[in-house]
Length: 184
Image (cartoon, rainbow, N blue to C red; front, side, top):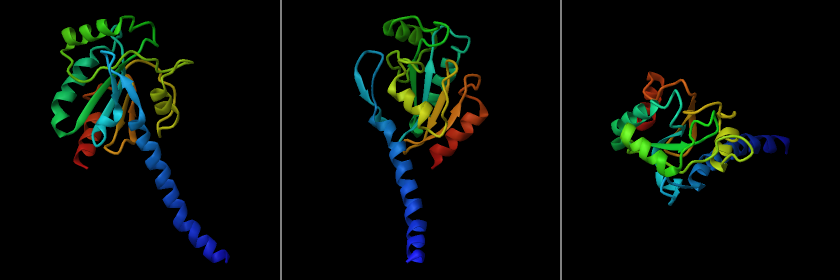
């Protein structure tokens, strides 16, 4: 009987782990967010795509990364990459504007064409549930420390990499990982 039980555990445990990972991965697609214009958008519309989620700010020393994000989006959109920007005012009041002002700034300064979402909180007591999930349940937990933290998500909705603020979106490590995911 012990042998049969041990054999069952050998088979069942990996299946249970795989099921739990699949459920955690698919959680991304359960979130509905407001876009920069106030319209509800299900992140499920990005199922099957490689996604780069970024918390952004318009008055940060790293704000020029918008240009790199736009280039990345234009370069890989046809192959299935989606860049999603989530403005946040959590660090040094560097995103003080309204959603309309943020949209105007991004369009006129960086010609941003990738999706911008309504301003949210990415840390603290009012952290948005999306970022609570990213920072606690993903394989890359930990508080967001500054603007332009990037989470890379595979076509199944699993968080597969996290790049901190100083890593430019066009850095070779980011590009290599994106290429790998787009080739899968």
